[in-house]
View 1: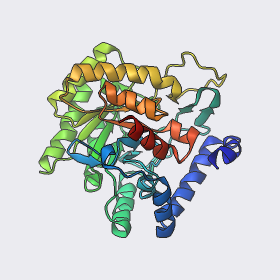
View 2: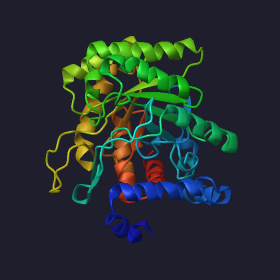
View 3: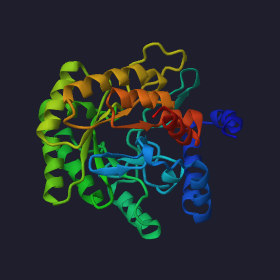
Length: 343
């Protein structure tokens, strides 16, 4: 059915379709009968798919990457669609509308997306209240919930650590793990927080808060694919020093090498063109960490074979975004079935 409606969807503005689909998913998520039907049709439950990572139990290794459900509007639907975990956000301390539209572009010839959304979200307070309401009506999520944190655009870079801490404090009760996102290319100056001094301050602040709560919840770091090997070495050193729970590799890229599409837009590129670089960085990071910290791989993963390759290289978990847009809601199910065949 998705193949039939996809041409119509792709004829419309990408963000308009995104908002419409999210409204539909929110409706299903709030209807227990529709939610159960979705679960029965889309979920592959098998003990062979289960993994333990960062002290959490995952029903499968296939996760939804941050950026799709930014504001936790359809929280229960993702488990029903067959994902093994989900990541909401990026959430910032202050609500913000993001960059000017249009800011989301499809590249069908490349199975890719370009976005310059700019962390548009309702802010940590509103998202926390929504998560509280979801828990009250549906209980805790059936799969691990990650909360991806970004910096508010109006916050000066020198105050970034406190901005992230504000979000972390407000959302702490609701996430199973948290992600410090300093690698989006769409907030001015954000990637400079990957430099040693600001990154040390930021990770010391966030992990310090986590330790002060007396409850172990992993803090992960999401890195860019456009870093040099020397920069990655430095980041991994800081991550290990601060006892991070994991590394997420990678975010979107500003590179445009080898694209078939004639679309020329600024922003972060995701999807198939990111596959080779994401895999290359995964290999490097896994080798450098030597098992000291789990790595979640994201970028260009579109099939069970892609996922299995990342797992064989050393990823603990994988995440999807662009391939979900291009292949539709049955992708997690098909990927889980494919992984079962290959295990």
